[in-house]
Image (cartoon, rainbow, N blue to C red; front, side, top):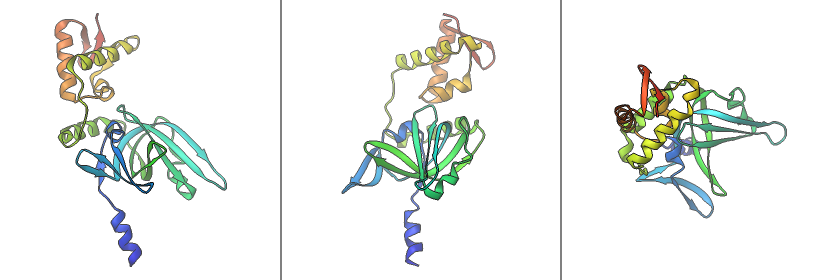
Length: 208
């Protein structure tokens, strides 16, 4: 019965966060042991995130170990699993979109996650999650960029995709670290200034 109580105690709230916000958290330690990430007024231990797998490493044998590097356009985070738990990530392939729930850890200055659940999901959920988190963003401590910086970021993204025939607005919203409303506002200004144009609805190209 004691073990069950301890297990329940460990079930902290799994906060829905973006990786960029996680990496801004301050690790709080006690005698070298990780306690939680301090993020605004939150004490974050468990996280629920959506991200793409961009790298994978698996070492099997006596000291089984695996790591995934995941990216959600706001930053990158490593997932680390040990022993029999590597089965949780064995079938994950690079490029797949994942929903991950796990506990945060810190070692030698690196913030990483030990995942409890790793599930493949549709890539469109990344945009849904960004919008969902944006609505609750007032609870987080986040550095806001000035309009000029945001404008330059958007222009750079559009220019980068010019050889591909432009960039979709939904992709732009995912790739730029700002609220969807702020991005749309800057895009409208760029269209009015004649720096970009829409060859078809939802598609942006650089006019320059």
